[in-house]
Length: 67
Image 1 (cartoon, rainbow, N blue to C red):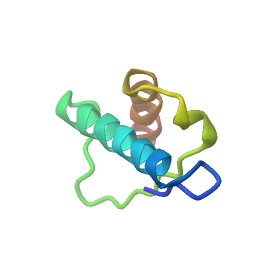
Image 2: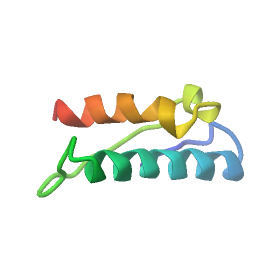
Image 3: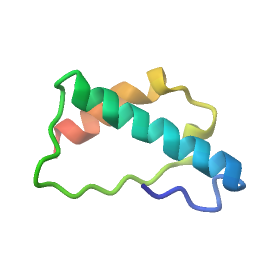
């Protein structure tokens, strides 16, 4: 996962990374996606700074399902 300096300071970038990781974990747990044999790159954007996991989960799930 990539959260560049344009997102904010280290604390903010790490929070965004944690939220994205949790969204991916929940998508896998619920059986919506599988990542076996796949490499993925996720680039966080400024909108993710104020988002919650529940808001990011459907977006991540849909993006990963289409791969």
